[in-house]
Length: 309
Image 1 (tube, rainbow, N blue to C red):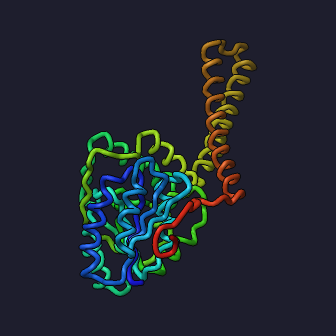
Image 2 (tube, one colour):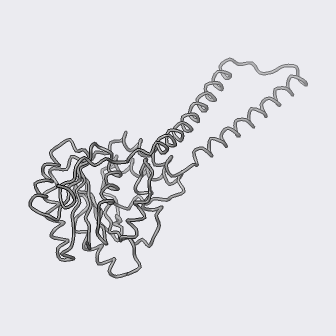
Image 3 (cartoon, helix red, strand yellow):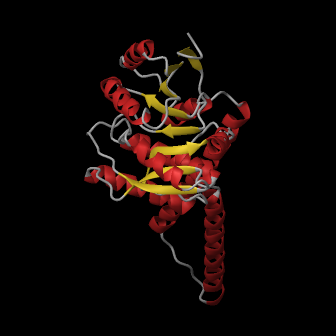
C-alpha cells in the first residue's frame, strides 16, 4: 500500500461525500494504490450511515466504528494504527483544510528524500476574533509550561512516512495531546504553507479548550509542580521574615501590629494557594491512576471494509 488517507467523523455527515470526491480526485493522479480510512468517533448524527454508503461502492474505503466517543486525538491515533500506507495523509474531514493539500505535500516530500513529514502551516489565522484569542492564549500558556514547543500555525493536515507513523503509534499514554506528540516525536519535518477556512461550526467550545489546556500541560510538563515548590518556598521565607520582624518589634518597641482584617485576608490567601496546589498535585495523581490502569484509548465496535465485513 502506497498511501493511506486517515480522517475522523464527528457530526460530519454533511461533509463526507464532498470530502470523498475531492480527496479521491487528488489521490488518483498520485498513485493507484491507496486507501481511505474513516474513523467514526461516536458521532451522534448519521455520519456512519453516509460513510458506509460510500464504503459499499468503493472497496478502497474502510470505516472504523468506535464503541463510543473518545475525542479527536484518540480517534486519529486509532486510524493510524489501521493505516498500511508507506505514506499516510492525515487531515480533518470538515473541508476547512483542503483535501487538495495532499498533492502539494506529496510534491514537497518528493523534493527531499530525507523529509519524514510534511506539515501544513498557516500564513495567518482566519478565525473569528474570540476563537483566535482563545486559540492564541491556549498555545502561549501551553508553551510557557511545557518543554515541548507547539506552533499555533500548524494544522492537522500532514503527510507522513511510515517510520514517523510507527513512532507515533509507540506513544501509549491515555491522555493524548496529538500536537505535542507530533512535535515530541522529532524526525525531519518540513512545513508547507496551507490555508484553512472556518465555516462557523466547531465542536471545540471554550470549556473544552480549557479542559484540553489542563490535560495538555499536565501531560507534557512537570513545571506546575516545580512552581508549587517555589511558591511554597517563597511564602515560607516571607513568613519567616514577618516573624523575625514582629519579634523584633515586641522586644525593642514593646508592641506589635494588630489587625483582624489583614490577618483574615492573609489566611484566606494562603488557604487558597494551598487548595490550588493540592488541586494541581491531584491532577497529576489522577493521571498516574489512569496510566496505571492501562485502559484502551479506543475500542473498535466494528470495521466495515477491507479488514472487516
